[in-house]
Length: 361
Image (cartoon, rainbow, N blue to C red; front, side, top):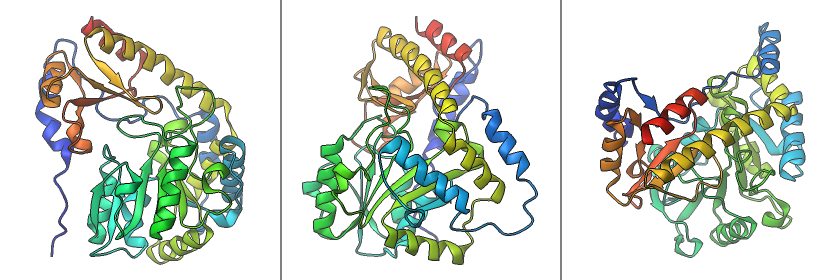
């Protein structure tokens, strides 16, 4: 029996991409948040040095990798963990898509996602046969809820949930006996200040107990490792042990050279600062250009996107920008509550940012 999965939304964007390509000067693709800057040399060297990978890697992650994840959470997030609280994954999307299945969810169980949501949360619920609902209000989460997805900083909207909001969500999840997970992949790209955005594992949030609480992270954004598929999950030791057992059976193991590269990436903050400032510059210029062209940018306090509207149907905005050779994503790809917003990615070169500014002027 075929799985009941939705159509891949980007297929609907293809005609607008074709139109943008006809523009004199070609397309500037602001629709996908895929890094365009080089992977830092120290990380590539670590990968190259580990290519004699003749034996099977550990599903749990090498000891140096687990220690590097623990050290990173302590140094950058103010979170104290042990190696039993962390687990590497093959990027974060794989983990997000299969988490409901790995947790044993099924028919009758409810998965909660944000109202403006990364589509993979719903895909994961569909793969497990669970029901997904969209709600940002913990008071609305029903008794049947078994898994709650938070996304702070958010994709697509860049919304940041503060410590009090995270704590309220954790309190409600405990009332329901539900697993609660924050997808925190953009935490280092915080435009409101120099420190990362709050983690759901922050001691002020969990108040002494990690039970049923998880944080998901990826190095794709902060270290330009999208092609490496380098992610991890951290938090409740019981859940980490459960996920590890499933992943051993399924053979879900990050390759050994990638694990070695992750150790170096997690231990070096300098390259993250360089990349963050690249994105800050691009964001400032694009924000000014779109504001000048009559757009209002909402939220967008962190992450790789501007969440923008000019008060019309999002597809009309997509079409108008395609006339100028600029491709963006309609808010409808992320739920039905943002019919007038578009998502604008910051992941283009400085020269392309300059060209967008010129086309919007």
